[in-house]
Image 1 (cartoon, rainbow, N blue to C red):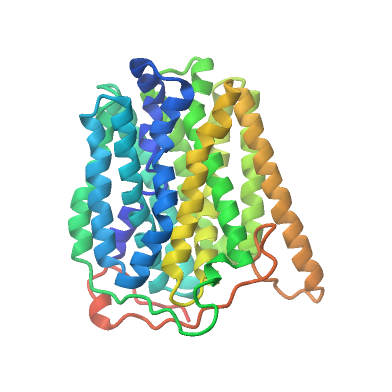
Image 2: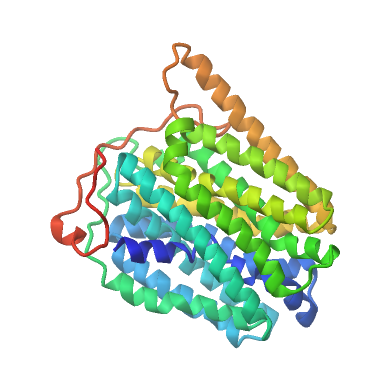
Length: 416
């Protein structure tokens, strides 16, 4: 089971990256502005953001198997439609439908993994998930760049992988819907201040990632790098660094905690974006991509695990869907917010300012926590300016019965 979930996870965060190498080609052949071309890569974030809360309720009500299989099927069909669509408005419509499928895939894979593991074992699995996502970020952009040499339509073929994955997801062991606990306030905790801080950081992190993915090709073109395959290699370098950091996540988490890792991530992103703004030779963007990817490799699992820790029992699907909504809202906003700046150096300088602001917010939150714990006790993981107190902790979750675990490919659980 875990192999299917990890493979499906590669289709989510990098859902737009497969098209990044052909953004310039698409813009020229369809006669689009830079902002309009960027929306082809990111507009699915809008429908994902709108559908997210309803998607979360579906997983809490019906479990993960059926909604995940349906989402993967929609992901494959709507995403692959770009192979034959010619008109820009229809292409945007298929991308919006694709976003709904991506919402089901992101929430389903995340909830299934969070429900299955606790403690150090969950940290390890979330590190694997980050690594799987980043390896997908190596394979899919390279595939997109290679296929882009044929036409701007060809990279959309990658999304068709959702169809066979839907069949595999349908055969996953059965699970049980989440049962929200009865009692006052059971419908409200997904909006508690700590989770709102996590959502805000997720939105900022994804906006920064897509600022890089959308505007890096134009930056490289100014440095003489125009081949779609060469551009894809820069995205691959980012993803390889993310993969390495994801494998190191459990050890880094034990040493620095979630808040410390998030501060390191935003510091790395600030430096990387400043380097992209400065330019120079092609080696500078390459080093910046590696640094940015390393930060993403620890931020993705940290934000995911924080959401699982802070979500109340019976509401994990909704909390995870809201995390997806926040992330893909940032993805959708990236070309709209940064596109009007027009010149890549200005785009990356503005993005560096956003990263520095988020770094300052997390640093101030950590300083406040240290003052509240003068004896040296480990403070709770608070991550944003709105995270004034930690949400209610979830009770220990029972391991699924033997038949659900058998044949999943997972080693025996060792966590508490």
